Length: 261
Image 1 (cartoon, rainbow, N blue to C red):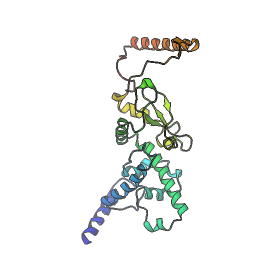
Image 2: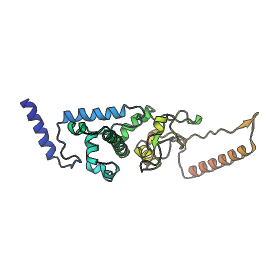
Image 3: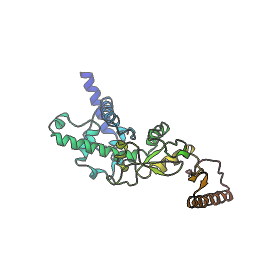
Image 4: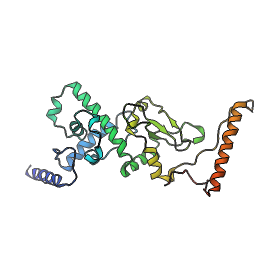
């Protein structure tokens, strides 16, 4: 017990000497215990059905004040929510809460995690974690036939929570789709933000797919419908004009998409 006390005291002293200002100033736990508690809450959250789109946020990122600018007013009792997420909320305080308050705290924690998540996934570490999920097609694949099962990316149409649900962006056809699962379509789009796909494809230009040129044209007994055929010819003409313009600018059309800086 004496050795254990000495270790805790030593770690507390190191924590107090750090120059980075943390949002929870009274949180002074040894690294082992902190990691165990954080893993517990995050694992429970990420393991819940419908949360497969989220990646794990580093606990240091959650508790760094710099990363939480302008998020203080998004939930009630901001500091308490942070403590709850990193499992540093006093057990007695939690036990004294009413069931309705605990339910509200859990909802605030999930919302806050989502908003921090939108910022984390455009960091270097966050992009790497989302890349692994993208390669595993955790976000699904494009339903368009000519996209050949292209993996999708989550994106929000608004950065403000409560406006719209998450959408799925296809880097191949560059269109948006609604998630198939009702659990996923209820996720707030602000938890992924409007900038993620663009940042992701700029960070990893080598995975940008070639844009498909094939189009489906409706036919009856082998004959194209007049209006559809006219539209298809116009679209094909525009594509050929664009290709000629790019060739005149010495762009190599055999390479992949254009997300490089």
